[in-house]
Length: 147
Image 1 (tube, rainbow, N blue to C red):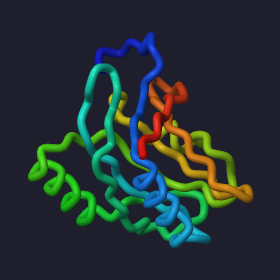
Image 2 (image 1 turned 90 degrees about the vertical axis):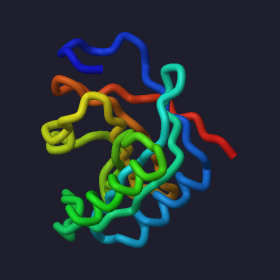
Image 3 (image 1 turned 30 degrees about the horizontal axis):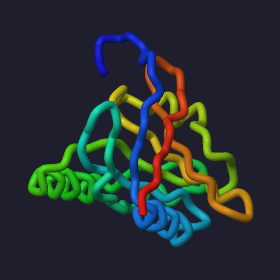
C-alpha cells in the first residue's frame, strides 16, 4: 500500500512448511554470517501467498548485516516474472539476535508493500517472524503455515 498512510489491518503471510525449512536451512548454512533471500508468490484476498523462495548470497559476509548479490537478485526477479509470480519481500537471518527488525533493517526497508522475514538462530530452535515496515515502524505480520 503506497500513499504514506499506515495499514489498519494486520498483514497475513501464507507459506508452506517446506519453504520455511528451506529458509532455515539456508540461514544455518550461512553461519556465522547472516543469510538473505527473496520470496515470491501471489496476493490473494488480503494475504501474501508465498510460492517460491530464492536463496541469495550475502556479499557482505557479515554476522550483523547483509547485502544481496545483485546478479542473483536480478536473476531471481527474471525467474519470478517468467513464472508469473510477484515479488512479496525478502528474508534474512539474525545469527545471534532476536527475530525482530534492527534499526538498520528498519532504515533500509524501502518497500512498504514488502514482507520482511527475519529468522533468529540465537536460541535452541530457530524463530521466524515476518514484518510490515512503513514510515519507520515495524508491525508483525501473521504467518500461516501450510503443509
